[in-house]
Length: 282
Image 1: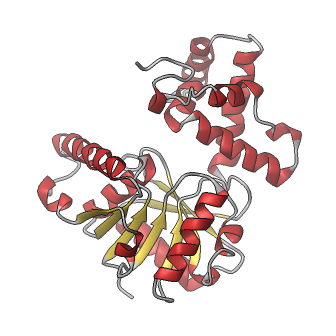
Image 2: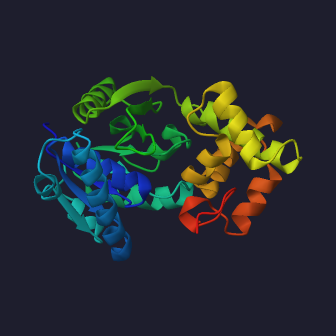
Image 3: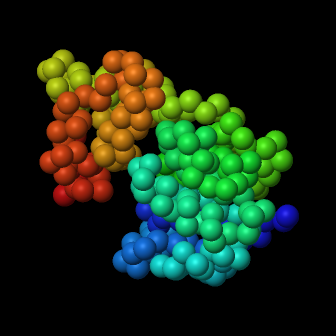
């Protein structure tokens, strides 16, 4: 089946970026979220992002033409006729289960369903559907419009045909697909999140200030962004969720979430999106 229209469920940071990239690559997009306010914020974000990319010469097509390929909806049923779906809701198994089961009952049997999960088992998510052979992980990086990588994760029952279709679609969207096996955190977050978690431990134990820790990693290890600044960008709640997935999946104490990370999430200090994390953004 030729993929002409894709559905993206969840209009947060990741879903908005995926929708933008898909529309920019010539696909029609239905971006769905339960909140109209969130959809409105998403459209404003996409509009500003396109302006910047056009100004830098990275996009030559008129912005209006790209936006005309993007439809928003608060009704999941509006995805019934799409050719492909990316689920990009909150990184929580129960939330994803509800959404995936609803989509599975709505979509035609041949439609491939993917999840943008950053750490949850693809085999487990696939078990919530009746199409485990047509289900896999499609993990985009943040910010989606700028980052080339997409991790492609096969579940135990994902077919070779499904993987080939998703890989081709990833390349059509201008991204670089990299295959990862279905282990907690896959490749990216198996490596990244323990580093961020250790940086939080270093802060909690007074090894250095947030600024000192980030500066060491930027100037000493040539990272473009320090781990605490990156945690604020990702969202501390997301970092905590991923660490909990790693800890639960491996039962290894080296993946234990730092108590300071948990405390900050409980306080509502989630990073950039809340105005305060390891740094203040208000």
